[in-house]
Length: 99
Image 1: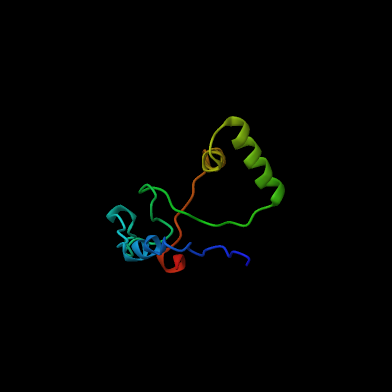
Image 2: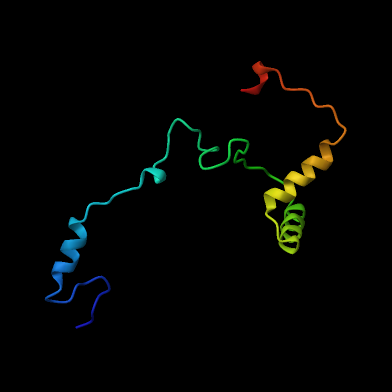
């Protein structure tokens, strides 16, 4: 007879019963606060998670630069933004157009 994965050998059924009976306790630190938007959960106050579409060759260069400099991709993007916006005046978007 071919043994199946996941079967419990005779005499050891108590192990699986014990596991089923254990109460799962989730630490309070792991619970998600639904009042915080998903894009900000688990991040520092001044950071936000975002998705962008960009040219593949740019992304490859960013990743390679981060790898060789031993820094995170977000640090490369932050430096790129710092250099791009340096000396530029940027007006805020009116509230009615932000949504």
